[in-house]
Length: 431
Ligand SMILES: N[C@@H](CCOP(=O)(O)O)C(=O)O
Image (cartoon, rainbow, N blue to C red; front, side, top):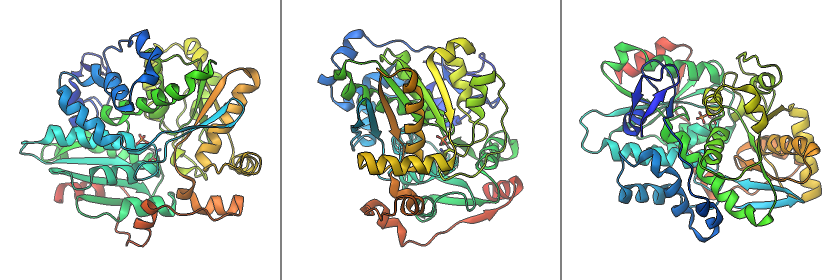
């Protein structure tokens, strides 16, 4: 399988090259040259297959020239050792819980898959790889956890100072070893911009092998399609048309779901649910894509003003807005509505939503106003305990803190404060 740059299709790479480079030399995101649907039989008999078998068959076409089957199976086994339950909380409204992994966010899947691929590709390589990653909250912790102790790999995480939750900050600043955290005086988009600038900085790339562990990297992005298939497996017995509502920030997650649909998964519609960072809902309404600096919200992991992966979504629908609208709706919700929804779902269904999941729930309900006979699944992208202050203040409860989180809470935060690109560059050049 070849992957081409979305800026210039003649620039191409193998899966291995795309993973090691992160983005194309022209700063374009890599995109697979083809997506071949899986057999109808595969979807009909999905409930007879294990999650590992489903994941293997789904990702195989994208990686098979670079990773032998036996190694791919090991990578999948190391990645997926937790559950992805779908729980119906109201008639025709179900939550897909993506927080049962080590850092309690959906990012654990992509981060672990990519860490395993990079570990596999780096075996016997002379030059170490530096993984740069920008985070608005959850990616950082998942990447830190997934790459901790991986030989030949050093990780540098950039996060916006004061704009991630306390637990998220602990997860990405306390592990030590091959993981370094950079606390940036700015917003997530500044962090993402610095990372992309470093990739094109010849002075750095002449002496360092850089890659990205954000969803711009195909090995972080594509495995996110697994759990859409696991959810479909659990929901198909309902015999209804299925709709996914995805809380969206950088749009890699929903885009991976759309790849699952291209693989043949029967889905009626996707909903991209956002907080006040509403570049995509606006684009869907008026056809004008206008990135703006992100604003801080209580669903901070979605505070993205220029979502990297939206370009991939447009490519999936040949840049045709009408075709895209047939398949995707997008709505934006305020913090106030998000909190009211957390209260309502807690009192009526006894379910504790995190602020991101609440935004996903709201998007689903909005879509179902016009399509009441669908079976809706919204994604709980992170455990509510990661947003302890908001949950305690909104619901007046103190959630039990799971062991994975307790383990980092008492550790000491270690970060380097930086305010601009030159400081990142000096750090990378000198380290
Ligand atoms: N929501 C993210 C922002 C980065 O997204 P990614 O999927 O491209 O890594 C976060 O939690 O950091």
